[in-house]
Image (cartoon, rainbow, N blue to C red; front, top):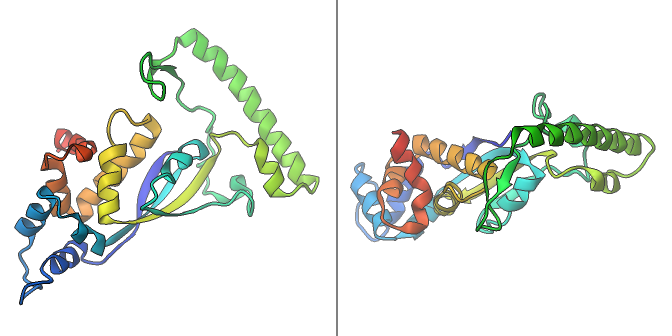
Length: 231
Protein backbone atom coordinates (compact mmCIF):
# COMPACT_ATOMS: atom_id res chain seq x y z
CA UNK A 1 0.00 0.00 0.00
CA UNK A 2 1.00 3.69 -0.20
CA UNK A 3 1.89 3.61 -3.89
CA UNK A 4 1.68 6.05 -6.78
CA UNK A 5 1.76 5.35 -10.49
CA UNK A 6 1.45 7.62 -13.50
CA UNK A 7 -2.07 7.90 -14.88
CA UNK A 8 -1.40 10.42 -17.66
CA UNK A 9 0.74 13.45 -18.49
CA UNK A 10 0.50 16.25 -21.05
CA UNK A 11 2.24 14.91 -24.19
CA UNK A 12 5.74 16.37 -24.67
CA UNK A 13 5.19 18.28 -21.45
CA UNK A 14 8.61 19.93 -21.25
CA UNK A 15 8.35 21.11 -24.84
CA UNK A 16 4.88 22.53 -24.11
CA UNK A 17 6.19 24.35 -21.03
CA UNK A 18 9.11 25.79 -23.00
CA UNK A 19 6.85 26.98 -25.81
CA UNK A 20 4.70 28.90 -23.35
CA UNK A 21 7.79 30.32 -21.67
CA UNK A 22 8.68 31.81 -25.07
CA UNK A 23 5.23 33.28 -25.67
CA UNK A 24 6.75 36.73 -26.21
CA UNK A 25 9.33 35.59 -28.78
CA UNK A 26 9.11 35.17 -32.54
CA UNK A 27 10.18 31.50 -32.46
CA UNK A 28 8.59 29.77 -29.45
CA UNK A 29 9.07 26.27 -30.88
CA UNK A 30 12.86 26.15 -30.82
CA UNK A 31 14.08 22.65 -29.98
CA UNK A 32 16.62 23.59 -27.30
CA UNK A 33 14.94 24.38 -24.01
CA UNK A 34 16.99 22.86 -21.17
CA UNK A 35 18.74 26.10 -20.23
CA UNK A 36 15.50 28.06 -20.50
CA UNK A 37 13.57 25.77 -18.14
CA UNK A 38 16.45 25.63 -15.69
CA UNK A 39 16.70 29.43 -15.65
CA UNK A 40 12.96 29.91 -15.11
CA UNK A 41 12.81 27.44 -12.21
CA UNK A 42 15.93 28.71 -10.47
CA UNK A 43 14.60 32.27 -10.67
CA UNK A 44 11.08 31.44 -9.49
CA UNK A 45 9.20 31.92 -12.77
CA UNK A 46 6.65 29.29 -11.78
CA UNK A 47 3.73 30.22 -14.03
CA UNK A 48 5.18 28.40 -17.03
CA UNK A 49 4.82 25.10 -15.11
CA UNK A 50 1.06 25.62 -15.06
CA UNK A 51 0.86 24.85 -18.79
CA UNK A 52 1.28 21.07 -18.36
CA UNK A 53 -0.60 18.62 -16.16
CA UNK A 54 0.16 15.27 -14.59
CA UNK A 55 -2.28 12.79 -13.06
CA UNK A 56 -1.39 9.94 -10.69
CA UNK A 57 -3.29 6.95 -9.36
CA UNK A 58 -2.57 6.66 -5.64
CA UNK A 59 -3.34 3.70 -3.40
CA UNK A 60 -3.16 4.51 0.29
CA UNK A 61 -5.18 4.44 3.51
CA UNK A 62 -8.02 6.73 4.49
CA UNK A 63 -5.69 8.19 7.12
CA UNK A 64 -3.25 9.39 4.47
CA UNK A 65 -5.85 10.36 1.86
CA UNK A 66 -7.11 12.93 4.37
CA UNK A 67 -3.66 14.55 4.23
CA UNK A 68 -3.48 14.38 0.44
CA UNK A 69 -6.72 16.21 -0.21
CA UNK A 70 -5.51 19.19 1.83
CA UNK A 71 -3.41 20.17 -1.20
CA UNK A 72 -6.02 22.47 -2.70
CA UNK A 73 -4.20 23.15 -5.97
CA UNK A 74 -4.53 19.46 -6.87
CA UNK A 75 -7.80 17.95 -8.08
CA UNK A 76 -8.93 14.60 -6.66
CA UNK A 77 -11.36 11.80 -7.37
CA UNK A 78 -11.48 9.24 -4.55
CA UNK A 79 -13.14 5.86 -4.27
CA UNK A 80 -16.51 6.39 -2.61
CA UNK A 81 -17.28 4.16 0.37
CA UNK A 82 -20.83 5.43 0.03
CA UNK A 83 -21.15 4.01 -3.48
CA UNK A 84 -19.15 0.79 -3.23
CA UNK A 85 -17.66 -1.76 -0.87
CA UNK A 86 -13.91 -0.97 -1.02
CA UNK A 87 -13.04 -4.59 -0.23
CA UNK A 88 -14.75 -5.68 -3.46
CA UNK A 89 -13.64 -2.80 -5.69
CA UNK A 90 -9.89 -2.37 -5.25
CA UNK A 91 -7.49 -4.76 -7.04
CA UNK A 92 -6.51 -8.06 -5.47
CA UNK A 93 -3.61 -7.75 -3.08
CA UNK A 94 -4.43 -4.23 -1.91
CA UNK A 95 -6.18 -5.60 1.17
CA UNK A 96 -3.43 -8.00 2.18
CA UNK A 97 -3.01 -7.31 5.89
CA UNK A 98 -3.53 -3.52 5.89
CA UNK A 99 -3.74 -3.78 9.67
CA UNK A 100 0.04 -4.30 9.67
CA UNK A 101 0.63 -0.57 9.51
CA UNK A 102 3.81 0.78 11.08
CA UNK A 103 3.64 1.49 14.82
CA UNK A 104 6.19 4.11 15.86
CA UNK A 105 6.90 6.14 18.99
CA UNK A 106 5.53 9.64 19.42
CA UNK A 107 8.22 12.27 18.89
CA UNK A 108 9.14 14.13 22.08
CA UNK A 109 9.03 17.67 20.67
CA UNK A 110 6.97 17.50 17.47
CA UNK A 111 3.34 16.78 18.34
CA UNK A 112 2.56 15.61 14.80
CA UNK A 113 5.57 13.40 14.20
CA UNK A 114 6.97 9.99 15.16
CA UNK A 115 10.36 8.43 15.76
CA UNK A 116 11.61 4.83 15.86
CA UNK A 117 9.45 1.71 16.25
CA UNK A 118 8.19 0.86 19.72
CA UNK A 119 9.48 -1.91 21.99
CA UNK A 120 9.11 -5.34 20.26
CA UNK A 121 7.26 -6.88 23.20
CA UNK A 122 4.75 -4.05 23.33
CA UNK A 123 4.46 -4.14 19.55
CA UNK A 124 3.56 -7.84 19.60
CA UNK A 125 0.86 -7.20 22.18
CA UNK A 126 -0.64 -4.37 20.13
CA UNK A 127 -0.46 -6.44 16.92
CA UNK A 128 -2.47 -9.21 18.51
CA UNK A 129 -5.16 -6.78 19.63
CA UNK A 130 -5.19 -5.04 16.23
CA UNK A 131 -5.71 -8.35 14.38
CA UNK A 132 -8.68 -9.14 16.61
CA UNK A 133 -10.08 -5.64 16.16
CA UNK A 134 -9.63 -5.88 12.38
CA UNK A 135 -11.46 -9.20 12.17
CA UNK A 136 -14.34 -7.85 14.25
CA UNK A 137 -14.59 -4.59 12.28
CA UNK A 138 -14.61 -6.41 8.94
CA UNK A 139 -17.16 -8.96 10.14
CA UNK A 140 -19.41 -6.23 11.50
CA UNK A 141 -19.18 -4.23 8.27
CA UNK A 142 -20.02 -7.31 6.19
CA UNK A 143 -22.93 -8.26 8.45
CA UNK A 144 -24.36 -4.75 8.27
CA UNK A 145 -24.27 -4.75 4.47
CA UNK A 146 -25.79 -8.22 4.31
CA UNK A 147 -28.60 -7.04 6.58
CA UNK A 148 -29.38 -4.21 4.18
CA UNK A 149 -27.70 -1.33 6.01
CA UNK A 150 -26.74 1.44 3.57
CA UNK A 151 -23.05 1.62 2.68
CA UNK A 152 -23.04 5.29 3.66
CA UNK A 153 -23.96 4.22 7.19
CA UNK A 154 -21.94 1.01 7.48
CA UNK A 155 -18.73 2.74 6.41
CA UNK A 156 -18.67 4.62 9.72
CA UNK A 157 -17.18 1.59 11.47
CA UNK A 158 -14.32 1.06 9.01
CA UNK A 159 -10.82 1.72 10.44
CA UNK A 160 -8.67 4.59 9.22
CA UNK A 161 -6.21 2.09 7.71
CA UNK A 162 -8.86 0.89 5.24
CA UNK A 163 -7.36 1.12 1.73
CA UNK A 164 -8.59 3.67 -0.76
CA UNK A 165 -7.77 4.78 -4.29
CA UNK A 166 -7.44 8.35 -5.55
CA UNK A 167 -6.74 9.95 -8.90
CA UNK A 168 -4.84 13.19 -8.34
CA UNK A 169 -4.43 15.69 -11.16
CA UNK A 170 -2.39 18.86 -11.00
CA UNK A 171 -0.16 21.20 -12.93
CA UNK A 172 3.58 20.59 -12.90
CA UNK A 173 3.80 23.65 -10.66
CA UNK A 174 1.46 22.07 -8.12
CA UNK A 175 3.40 18.81 -8.11
CA UNK A 176 6.70 20.66 -7.77
CA UNK A 177 5.56 22.27 -4.54
CA UNK A 178 3.74 19.15 -3.31
CA UNK A 179 6.94 17.09 -3.54
CA UNK A 180 8.93 19.98 -2.11
CA UNK A 181 6.85 19.70 1.06
CA UNK A 182 5.76 16.07 1.34
CA UNK A 183 8.99 14.30 0.33
CA UNK A 184 10.83 15.86 3.29
CA UNK A 185 11.78 13.71 6.25
CA UNK A 186 9.41 15.52 8.63
CA UNK A 187 6.39 14.33 6.63
CA UNK A 188 4.60 11.23 7.94
CA UNK A 189 6.51 8.23 6.59
CA UNK A 190 3.59 6.72 4.66
CA UNK A 191 2.84 10.01 2.90
CA UNK A 192 6.54 10.60 2.31
CA UNK A 193 6.74 7.28 0.43
CA UNK A 194 4.00 8.41 -1.94
CA UNK A 195 5.59 11.81 -2.54
CA UNK A 196 8.97 10.26 -3.29
CA UNK A 197 7.46 7.82 -5.77
CA UNK A 198 5.80 10.76 -7.51
CA UNK A 199 9.13 12.61 -7.55
CA UNK A 200 10.91 9.67 -9.18
CA UNK A 201 8.20 9.27 -11.81
CA UNK A 202 8.38 12.98 -12.62
CA UNK A 203 12.16 12.61 -12.86
CA UNK A 204 11.65 10.15 -15.71
CA UNK A 205 8.93 12.17 -17.45
CA UNK A 206 10.34 15.68 -16.89
CA UNK A 207 14.11 15.24 -16.46
CA UNK A 208 15.06 18.85 -17.20
CA UNK A 209 12.44 20.30 -14.87
CA UNK A 210 13.26 17.90 -12.05
CA UNK A 211 17.01 18.46 -12.34
CA UNK A 212 16.42 22.18 -11.88
CA UNK A 213 14.08 21.56 -8.92
CA UNK A 214 16.72 19.44 -7.20
CA UNK A 215 19.42 22.07 -7.75
CA UNK A 216 17.49 25.22 -6.82
CA UNK A 217 18.17 27.00 -3.51
CA UNK A 218 14.46 27.54 -2.77
CA UNK A 219 13.90 25.92 0.64
CA UNK A 220 10.22 25.32 -0.13
CA UNK A 221 11.51 22.68 -2.56
CA UNK A 222 13.74 20.85 -0.08
CA UNK A 223 11.75 17.65 -0.54
CA UNK A 224 13.41 17.18 -3.93
CA UNK A 225 16.88 16.90 -2.40
CA UNK A 226 16.62 13.16 -1.76
CA UNK A 227 16.96 12.56 -5.51
CA UNK A 228 20.50 13.93 -5.44
CA UNK A 229 21.38 11.27 -2.85
CA UNK A 230 20.18 8.35 -5.00
CA UNK A 231 21.30 9.55 -8.42
